[in-house]
Amino acid sequence: MTRLERTARGGLIDEAALLAAIQSGHVAAAGLDSFAAEPMTAGHPFHGEPRITLSPHIGGVTADAYVKMGVGAARNALAVLNG
Image (cartoon, rainbow, N blue to C red; front, side, top):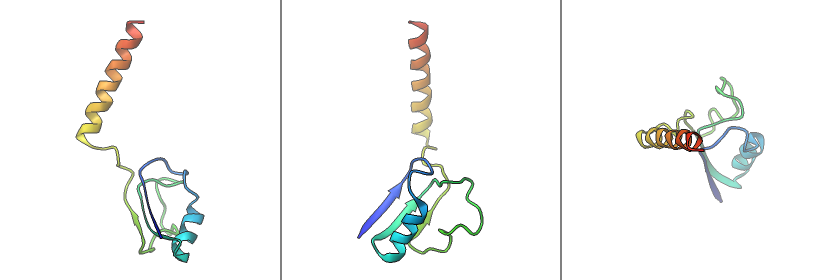
């Protein structure tokens, strides 16, 4: 069996196929933080599936990520200004 973890963009995975693979046992479990449609609405097929762990789309919300984004933005701005 396979375990799936994703911290990316919603829509990269066929959600219906993932649900079918989990229910059939081909995939053991999945942890997802982004979905094809956000915000996820009540009654989504993943709700109540015990082998799917859902979290809000906050994978990049860390102090280190903010510092790296700021440094990257500053470097890009300097690169443009320096030609």
